[in-house]
Length: 446
Image (cartoon, rainbow, N blue to C red; front, side):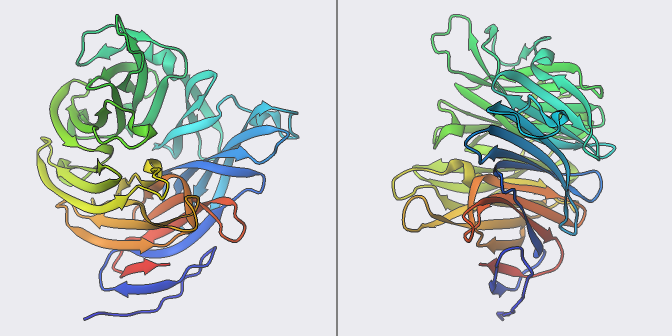
C-alpha cells in the first residue's frame, strides 16, 4: 500500500517535499550554505574528522577585476550544521596587495586532495602552477603543523611496476594527486604522473602513480603503473595485512577531458610494498573505491557508450573475486549543442559505519532555455555489503556546478556537499546537506 506523507523541512533556501514512498534508511535532517560575497567557490573536498565532525575544504576565485586574489578555506562542519572557519589562506596572483594579514598569504593556490588523520588533524595536498605539489598537515584549530615537498620525495626513486622503460621526468607541475589514504603506518598518495619514456615519439603519457610515506611523512617507496596511454589512479583502500586495492582508469584518451568510451578500469590488489597480487579488468571509468566488512571492496564506476553512461556498483571479496555487479542508473551526458558534462556526472561513494556504502551523483534530466541552463537530480543510494539496495533518495537542487557531489560519512550521519547557483541571487555557493542513516522514507525532494 502506498503511503503519502507531507513533511516540512527547514532549509537555507526553499525546498518542498513532493512525494514519498515506503522505504528506509535515508532522511534529510538539514541543509546549509557557505558563501562569500567577494569570492566564487570553484571546487570542494570533504572528509570525516576523527571526531563526529566533517572537514570541508573549498577552493575560491576572486570576483575582483583589479586584484586577482584566490584563496582556499578550511571549515569544520558539526552534526548540527554549523560550519566553523578554521583557516583562510590567500594566493595573490597580480594586482595591489589587499589589506589582509600577511601570514595568510600562501604559495599553494589550490587544494587537490584531503584526508583526516589521527589526533583530529587534516592532511592536504596543494598545488601551484609554478611550484611543486605540497603536503600540508593542519591541526584542529587551523594551525599548520608541517609541510613536505612531494616531488622531492618521489624523486628519491620510483619503481616502475610493469614496464622496463626508463622514466624521464618532464617539467614541474606534472604530478597530480587525486586521493590520500591514512593508516596506522603513515599514508598513501595516489594519482597520475605525466612522463615521457626513452625513445618515445609521443610525449603525452600519464602513468598511475602511488607514493607510500611513513608516519613522519617521508618517502618509503613509490611506484608507477602503466597499462595504456593515459593511466590514472582515482582512489584506493587499505585492506588486511597492509595490502591496498587501487582503481586505475586507463585508456588511449585522457578521461578527465571528455567522453572516453575506450577506457578500462584495472582493479589492483597490491601488497604492502605495491607489488601486484591480483588484477581485475572492468570496462568503465572513474572508479570510486570504498572498503566494506569482511575484507570486501566496493567500486562505483560508469560505462560510457556514445553520450550515455551506465553507473554500476561492483563488490569484490578479499581475493578480488566479484560477488555482485549491478547497474544503478543510466545518466545522459549529452546537451542540446552536443556537449558533454562528464565531471559533474561522476558518482562518488563512501562507507558508513555499519559497513554499508552510500553512493551519490548527478543525473542530467533536462535542458531549459539553452545549454547554459541544465536540470539535474541528485541521486543517493545506500547498498549493503551484499549489493542489496537499502535506501534511496532523490533531490531536486539549485543548478549544480563545479564537479561531482562530495560525501563524508560519520557514525550515524553523512554530509553531502556540492556547488550550486542560487536562483535568486545568481551567485555560486557551497551547499551542504545532512543525511541521517536511520529508518526513514523513500523521498523525492524538489
